[in-house]
Image (cartoon, rainbow, N blue to C red; front, side, top):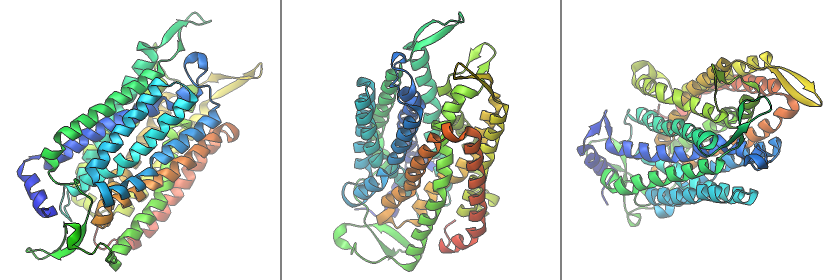
Length: 485
């Protein structure tokens, strides 16, 4: 088996696109279509669960739907630790990506074909299992395209992250058109205006399935050409002195190494940083993922979505965050590579991300102050809705915070983790999102009881406080990273 250094050299000989290997862009498009699939489904999941049967929904109570959403999106990020371990030890990253992609395709197809609560359960379970194989391993492959210490990694993950969000941007638009226009049934309401009588949610799930299939066709057709041997086999690594002087990690056959060799003290400290950062980031994602649950329901009921004579579909707001990502990711990729960005440690970047998330929720708190309601015949009637700009500004701050945390986190895990544990530790990183989404589901479930203002203000103050704490301990964490930025 060729060493990691030799394989990277061969990949570099294929030529670069904007200073990065062509394999990065293969992974970019594979992830783009997977995220198209996931975010297309996510854009309509809460609405599908809570709309009436006659509207082609499942008529699940909002608090129960919020918990289902939380547990689903949570377990989507729990199974990667298992899928990463299986890939590291037994099947390799590329096989895991294929298994995961096919399983998720079947999950979306089930949601399309079986429009019952049982179909919902089976479909979501398949998506959870499939994502466990797919998610940690494609992120690990991005890091393995570069040599140890290559300063382009943060930039590469920002580009990769743009692919994620390009898919997330397109999916809600396509799904909204299918569900609210092409396959919706419309009629005339009591006020004489046209209204949707039933939604075409099943066709949104079909579009998600097709997107997943396209991604797998692209990956399996081109991986051998642009990734060569990377990710074909389970990770096995030892530390050797190479001819250029520095210590380097290379891949070797399992028979040529002692895979039970203990980790060095530096490796242990670096791994501990992964766990510490993971613990902090749980609370970022618990707030951030309100976008798909409490913020979606709040937007549907309390945000004025009219622009002129056009009423914007609630699903379309799921595209605002990825739109900002696509616009801002190149700027952040440039900034992290600049002298100023290079001086900022990962803990500092992440602390800023948490503070920015909190600032975003302060705008949602202001929005609640603009809403006016009255009770008529025991039902709430909204007299005045909040302006659209509150929601847009919230998403803007959340997006900047996300760019300070997610692509940076993916990058630093590939730098800090020993190669033989790379995918498993990527799964550990994603474990933060598992806990966060379940926590976020419980938070969303309490919006009805405590009120949106209480929830939004509590999230804002808590994550800003944690961001300040992380900033205070950032220097200590940087020392534990032993030179990794």
